[in-house]
Amino acid sequence: MSRPDGPTHDVRPLIALVTGSIVAADIRRGDRLVEDLGMDSLEIADLLVTIEEQFDVVISADTLAGARTVAELEAAVGRLQCVAG
Image (cartoon, rainbow, N blue to C red; front, side, top):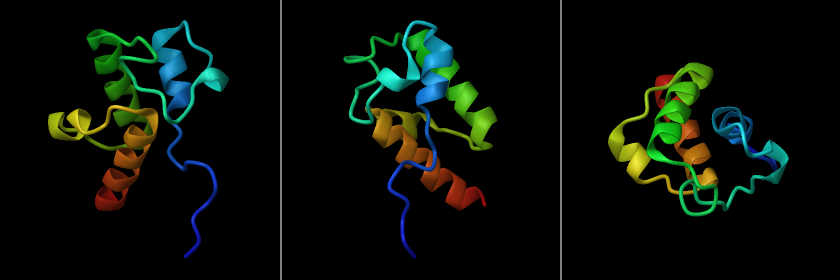
């Protein structure tokens, strides 16, 4: 089975929505949520709730701890959707 070139679980628009100060087009998949995008703990909590609602998944603290970049978060969402679906 071939994999599409782009991420299938694009969280960049959700990051832009939650922060209100970052344009989705400016977010790169390698960006780190805290260090590069400047997200604080409240924004990350809001992002997780938004992701859970948008993609119908539940993100654990362990999953969050392992996802420091946008790409890692997208991959985690993809794995969770495979398990849930």
